[in-house]
Image (cartoon, rainbow, N blue to C red; front, side):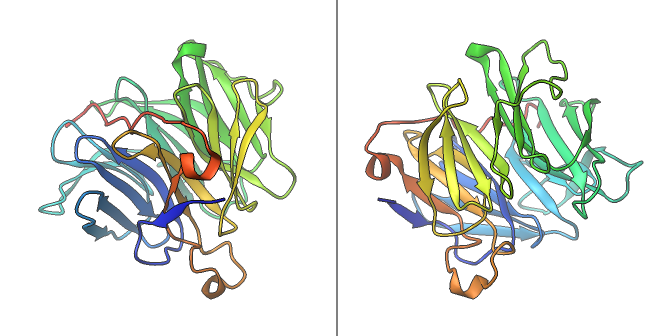
Length: 293
């Protein structure tokens, strides 16, 4: 039985990118279509939000008080006090209809961010690596909708998905090479897409399955281990957090619902108690901050 609470206070259009900061015991997330960044402090329950003049797809803490944002057209530092933006680099400048989408930092604090055609029709997306100096490297091209960035260092693999193809692939790491022509690690059923993911301490991949109303946990062999049914159709991503790392935060979209008003949890950010829901002890690492300041 699902044991959950909502940590958001509005029905977002497209909540995404949950990021747990262990230092401040806070959850950050974005509303891409709402052009907002949100922060919720667990101990006090206080929330704060900031609105921007373009879509924002991901948020990270840094080595200072500033945040790092993935905006539609590039990566920028954001001062939450003065609300000043400072671009670190622009991306996909040659593809003006692209926007940035899912993003994560690796264990060294290097940013990896995927892009996509904002109309979700063309395969013009890329996967970018951005370091703290703003140096950018394109790792993949010809992507439909970039999603699911997660590293299993013990198995030397990096998970990345193209939601348009319904496939998650396990790429070799750190000796990265394109394996998209090989069999997928996971292929979702027709009509559903793999959205954002996170990894637990045992190397299981937890994936938000867009359109299916589920978070699915896969073993390192790609076998379904757990399925959590959710009170909305379109989960967008998930992340472990909380003081012990045993809470699964799940973001969602209301835009995927036929009648959002009839689905009050659609577009919300929920916190799932996994022990009460599944009867198991499971935890994962907090979000990795960006290496720059």
